[in-house]
Length: 371
Image (cartoon, rainbow, N blue to C red; front, side, top):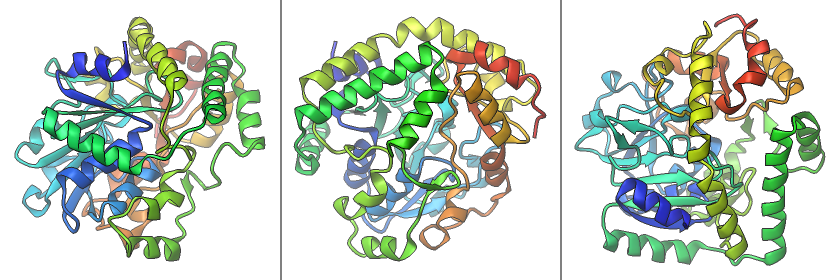
């Protein structure tokens, strides 16, 4: 079954296949919001999400964070002061979507393909939900956009096609082969050599700590061209330069194949969540979600960098670290949070662990000191 059909069956919505979650977020922000509007968003998410908001011509309003979940804390937000909300559902822990009723709501469900709220899948509460095929499925690329009606899906499809770049078979072969190699490396405990090779080949963007270089003067120049996605390509494409390149039959076959494996991994993922939830440093919000097959289980620990190195030695790769928060990372381009302490604490101490590899990680994690 194709990814868009599979997610249409899960959400009951009209779904559109995309080369990336990133392109889907930009399309929804442009479709449902107007340039100049104020968008409430989490301070902790991937670099490119901030740049997509800027590319859409919106003003990022940085929200206070919940210490329990690492998501937006609605109790500390004046929702009358913003026009729209972008949720993150960090590591699969659900945002309090019901608190945003009445607002234009865009759900980034990249981390939360398998998460539900009151039995209802995330991605069905807002005007749009944007899924990633590179997270739970591990397909290396691809996204799916879910919306309520066929007319909106058609308009977004046309907007997508205007932004797509033509693909090439050779590049597609390399992309699929690279993703397959990553899956093999994980299964065979070859994470350390695989990471070393990726870094040697320049397959990871250069970073200043955990964020890519902001290049503020150039970013200000791009901002003057907003709303314009091409102007922001140098920032949005980090670690995925083909984020708006069309995919052919090979990539679509591979995405479908990887997505079909997600259900089979569910019980293993749930078992990993429960074993990691027993650790003293686990984020409190995880204890409310033991029935959810989370993408990652967030622990809050001291000496995180030492823990990351120790996990790599045991064949567990750590990624998805978003430090510092957006308003510290890009102060000139955001409206700062009125209560930044929780976000700074999370960004500095969170260690996301893949529950599928909890058995490998636990010998390291048991010795960590909670933050």
